Image (tube, rainbow over all chains, first blue to last red; front, top):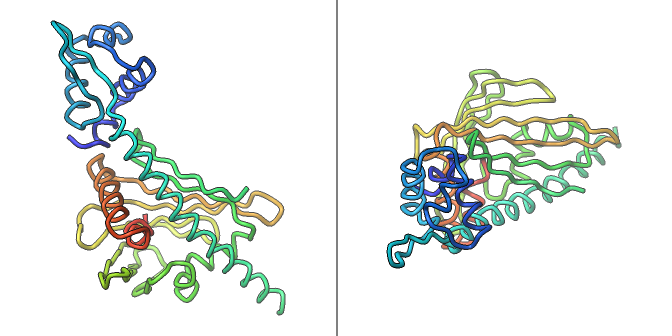
Amino acid sequence: MDTFQALSDPNRRRIIELIATKGQLTASDISENFKISSSAISQHLKVLREAKLIDMEKRAQQRIYTINTASIHEIEEWARKMVKTWDERFKKLDKLLEDLKKKGGKK
Amino acid sequence: MNDTQFEVDRDNLEVRITRVFNATPDKLWAAYTKPELIVKWWDNTEVDKNDLKVGGAWRYVSHGGDGSVHAFRGEFKEIEEPKKIVRTFEYEPMAGHVMTETLNLEPVGDGKTKVTTISKFDNAQDLEGMVSMGMKEGSSAGLDRLATVVENI
């Protein structure tokens, strides 16, 4: 399961937001915030773990979930690079449009 | 002003890029459709085909700084001068993964135009594929090659 597929589900995105807000949560903590069944939550947590968006640690009988910050950071980094690339291209387009205006003015 | 907005909408499988330009839609239309103008703001890119009519083919070839060549192609679906272009988009090595790209030019007064590009993906895997390719290219060979990969989205 890849990152974007994992994030394509609104419930999974809410789970991530919830864990990110609280820092760490158990599966039952998470279930309390949702109307869907705890087995559905388990399935979502499995998908998110496989996509490396969250980490799980076993403590005694509990499974504690935390955000995988490196993975989240990678997505943000990609978006930042895309903005930079388009900014640079659009600056060239600004210049071209200025040139077109000047040519238009001569007519 | 003139900030580039970049948005990934995972619910609708869309990537949207928005920016306001200090020019009329006519000028932007020319910059987006005339091959001799396209190459002025898209680095190292040749316009191989640009048959600007519904059903017409387009194909651009980009040259990476390391000698690599990347070709992109598709078909025009809707043309409404100077407002809107809808075309399909395929990266040739990944043929079959077709996305639909919509360009909207909207006058916002004072001689300015808001440009919105929407890339609509068929499925989440294709969207993720584009992202991971962009990440890989970007980290291994700098922004030039990233630009090659993403410039037609």
